[in-house]
Length: 234
Image 1 (tube, rainbow, N blue to C red):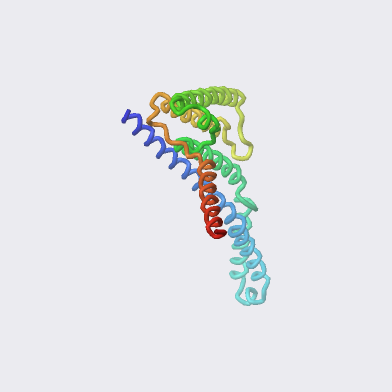
Image 2 (image 1 turned 90 degrees about the vertical axis):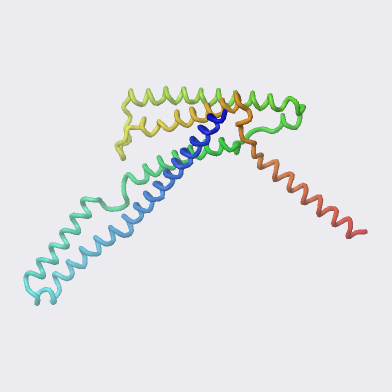
């Protein structure tokens, strides 16, 4: 069991890093897109217009043909550079940013599930006898595992169809099945993780139940305030 616990711990660390790297690349892409549009384009356009104005100025005429030719050469170089890299933001940056946001969000879902931060109904915890709750939680893990493994199977079918149809994003020219590989991995990871939680219940994280904790805290605070008011009335 210790080996399985270590494996799940290492897997959680790897998925945390993978999600963090995705969001880091997303941030760098957005910064690059804005810098290209607001800094590089403005710099090249400004350089071209200033060199053209300088070539037609009396100063350049007085310096001689070499000054005029140099200014025009710099102008043409700036314009050709802008034509080569394209005007506006980076065309493929927004599409890749969406991919990284998708991947990062899915890795975050896995990490949240590994910590027990997922949403789940708590009615059975209040109604059923406490002796039955552990068995209910085992069944819960098995059902969740089966659900995610079924989704993994469907995602494999979807990727197979995408490969057969040779679907390619027209902007990034990336085959879509390469982007979609994240789905079977995520569903398989979550399915196997919950299956191990069902087999070894001691490995399962405690459910955070943030909503219940917030309500209990509010009730305590209201109870204290009510007692304080009663004392004041006496």
